[in-house]
Length: 355
Image 1 (cartoon, rainbow, N blue to C red):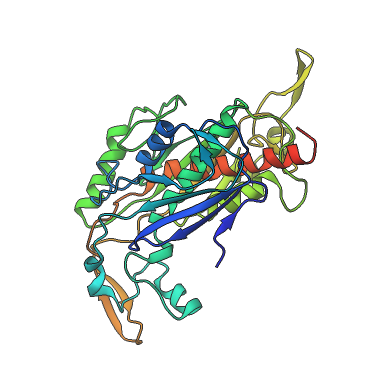
Image 2 (image 1 turned 135 degrees about the horizontal axis):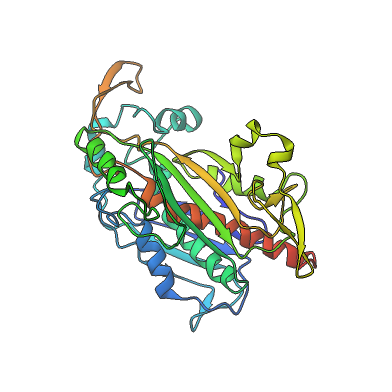
């Protein structure tokens, strides 16, 4: 099983949803970075269970215990080990579905691959695993802030309802973590309607990376958009990603899609940003803009057709503490993965003497 991401800045994680703890190791983090614990705690609070009125009733404090790599509040350059304890898991909620494959989950595929699975909340495939990513992303954000680079995401569509007339002015507030828009109440109501029906909804999250510098990324297999896609698509609920104009570019002419250039103050600038800040796999200095499709939460109380691990037809209704929409808690996870990738490429450029 692959538990690591990154080349120069590496995050390796461990742990399951209903195990004793989750945690990991961050390698390659530079020395001398002030580790702002208040900022880290605020990032963890955005993702933690129970952080929004629209989410799960499971409440975890998600307190990160840093075991190594930080001394007197400053990174030492050695591996940063950390652990996050589970305190309120209720494994009994899953006893009735121990032998039933839940539709939309990784139950069947884990069994097919490993011949064994942790039915308690999905084990390693649970969204609970992303708490480790958010901690790693918080450290990456602290590193990027020194370069003037920031990463922010927000919900721009929920249950097929697109946010109307909004301005991009992060950070965004709950319960949806969406930009202020004319139809915010309608978006929230759609989530509450699905919840009352024992169902769930998905949506689209936009992420913008500002303060970018040109020259990050590699021209072939480690293109910046390719590594960002790998990181974002590794998030369990994500089903798609597009950069800049995205799929709409397929319906444009080259004269419309190309980002024209002019000189301003002795530097080339792009008049538009259909490329989403990346050309040939390398950042061009524009804001990096991408959008992510997030599926509806698969754990729903509505009855669904399924089968057992002994080959019998059955039905299943998943009860317990689940999110009717995963979007708000996915926002900090998407930011975290994007920050880790940009920080990794930044350190790669330094290693190659290009930054």
